[in-house]
Structure formats: structure tokens, C-alpha cells
Amino acid sequence: MTRLSFVLFGFLLSVLLTVAGHLDGNGLSPWAHTISDYAAADRGGAVETAMGLAALATLALLPSLHRADRLATALLSVWSGALLVATVVPTDPVGEVLSTTGYVHRYASTVAFAALLAAGLRLGFRRLTAAGAAAALAMLASTYLLHRYAIGLTERVMAAAEFGMLIALTWRLLRVAAIRQGFLDGAGRVKLALTA
Image 1: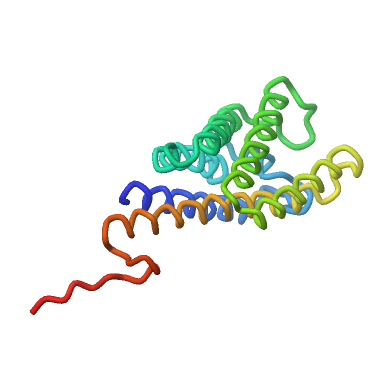
Image 2 (image 1 turned 90 degrees about the horizontal axis):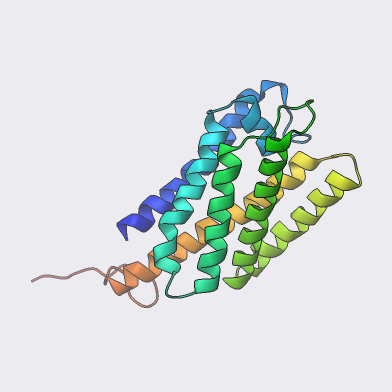
């Protein structure tokens, strides 16, 4: 249960670091620029740290899920690995032509978020997965049809839905662990030990 508590903390801290990384902005707009643009503008900063932390938190989550659902575990492994690649291999700064490393980053990010959407569907997070999938489709339309119009907004909706799923999954696993260890009853209420 302690490991899962750290996983939950890791996901929440990742979200907070991403928000903090947007505060300065470096002249970027969350409406028109991707999260990766923010990471590229501040190499080694809060956003890039958040990406790596989310990948590592997912790796720490996998042992709690492995026996229950191997396919979801495999999909989350792909998400984590691809996110680590996207963290280590940055995109190009805004305004520059996309280089080979920029393409590696782009496709690693695409694989990561697609794997996470598939894992969410597999694990039964239908509403969050539907919101994430709708935002992903809007992001594709923005990228290929609308000249990146509102690409930042659509990506953030997708990321919020997917991180919501990771946080909800971790919370669910924490509750199951607490019930097994006798801290909660079957209805999820805290058990109080009464002593005479």
C-alpha cells in the first residue's frame, strides 16, 4: 500500500509540475502550443520533469496490476516506455523545422497516449477514455486539417482525461489494498479497532 501511495503522489506531483511549468510560459500559449513545446522551451524544467515522473510512477504501478490484467499492464508499460522516450528525446523549439529527434518525440508521444487510451478502455474507464479519445481526434484534426488551431487546448483535454484515469486507477488499487489489509471494510469505510 505504501508503494501505491507514492505512485498516487507521483501522479499528483506530475500534474502540479506541469501546471507550474506553464506559469512562466516563455511566451507560449496553452491554447496554441503543446505540452511538448513547453518542455522544449525549458529543457530540464518542470514540464519535462513531470513527464519523466509520470512515466516512473506508472512503472511503479504495474506490479499491482500485473496479475489482474496482463493486457492493461502491457499497454501501461508501452505508455511508460514511450513517455520516457519522449522525455529524453525532446521536440524542436517552436518555429524550427521538425528534425529527426522531433519526429521521434512526436511518434513516441503518439504511441504513449494511444496506449494509455487503450489501457483506460481495457480497465473500464469509459467516460474518461471517451473524453480522451474525443480530444485526441480533435487534436488530429487540429494538426492535419486546421493548421494547429487550438492544438494546445485539445491536447490538454486529452492529457487531463488520461491523467484522471491514472489517478482514479491508483485510487482504486489503494482502496483494494486497504480492504485486503483490513483498514477498510467491504463498503470502503474505515475500520476502527475497539479495545476495552
